[in-house]
Amino acid sequence: KRRGFLFQSSEIYGGVQGFWDYGPLGVELKRNVKDCWWNDMIAGHNELVVPPGAPGTFDMVGLDSTIIMHPQVWKCSGHYDLFHDHMVDCHESRKRYRFDQVRGRWVEYRDTKVFVATLAEAEQEFDDVRRRGMKFFKLRNKDADKLTIGDESITLDKLDSTKEVLAPDAKKLDTLTEPREFNLMFKTTLGALGGEQDVAFLRPETAQGIFVNFKNVLDSTRLRVPLGIGQVGKSFRNEITPRNFTFRSREFEQMEIEFFCH
Image 1 (cartoon, one colour):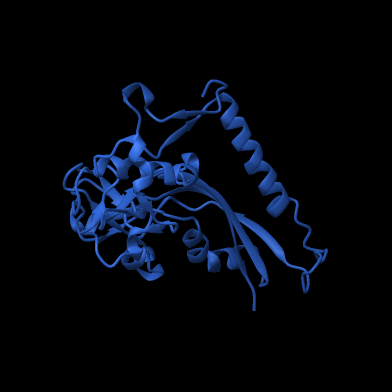
Image 2: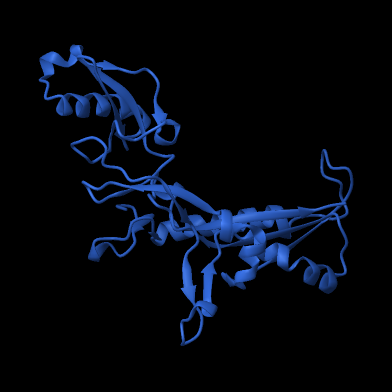
């Protein structure tokens, strides 16, 4: 932020989690990466030369498809029915978590065993589990050795039940709901009426735009397989818990190639 690479989106109003704005230097860096990739993969490809390891020559072309596509595209691709994560809600903290991302360890004190969950990074996970375990059992620092903390770090989806789980922001056990499916596609509406028949989705990846235009590309360029089609563009995923800086955000840019062969 201080050097002008990246800013939190809408920061003056508190920010929006999972969205980032690229500053003066950040936008130039991103443009350089995209241009380098495009020139190396698409524009600079020589279809008359056989690359090392390739069985023969092939063509590479580019494409720029729309962000909003016909809903049937996502039905046929499986995204409508299968592109989802499992989430759980905490009754106490009113927070929502992705079921397979919350990690933790078993903590035991005087024959009482609980699973302490945490959202801390891997290197801070053990310390956070110990701190929360001591707080739950009302222990002082001098009694830290009386806690038995499991060596294995596991995720919530590996547990048989969440009844003995201390949620990441909770103070008591058994505050999590049963896991339920959450579709990761952003929903929007087309037109003025906004009925069920007007529902559309922002693309969660760029690949489908390449697939549905495959025949158009062949007919317009008169090329034949083997053929690669590349695209650079925005994708959107309604992540339950965006994390890891820009590596798991709700709006991001993809550089993707789909290769077609016999």
